[in-house]
Image (tube, rainbow, N blue to C red; front, side):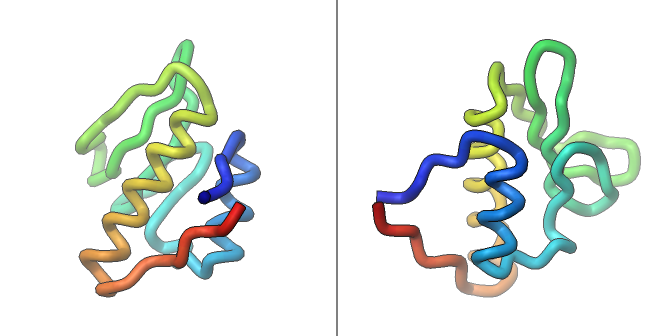
Length: 91
């Protein structure tokens, strides 16, 4: 079973350990042409940033849920772009 990511720091470590290209994501803010995870009011937003638009915006109530949402989006993007993704961790 795959480990649960509980914070942005955990997610960044997970992506680094699994060799996820940094050009695909931005944690903690916004960067053009990347999937972004950013604090938003009372929760967290995950979206694709294109110029000033937030495409596919999903709002999460807590950080662990947002991190899991971003992880799922990055996994899908890697499958489409590279035809591969990471191997799930074993518990």
